Length: 122
Image (spheres, helix red, strand yellow):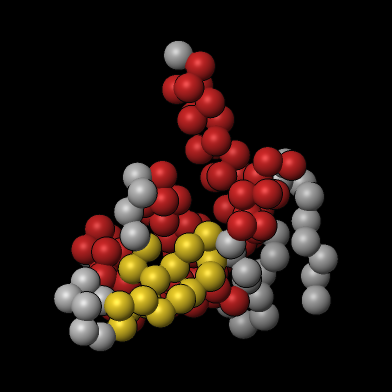
């Protein structure tokens, strides 16, 4: 029971982090719709992360049903905010490259410390 309760707390803490990070720190020119899409995308990516699924564009497209551009529109602001880190990896066929994402380690450090600890604004 303790591990289930712990997972529930982690999920709630991550949701609070996502809301605070995106809604309390709007980027100039960003629309409310864009911020909501980012929060939704963070939730999907966190669930994928918890399931140990690779955060590649192809996997995200498959899970969300969004177009490639739709996924990119939600992911790119998260990379710019420093929430996600992008790397290039070999694609599943091993011939080309694919974009893969991961949560920046600082995100989980902030979650451990509590969501009220903020990184300095630049």
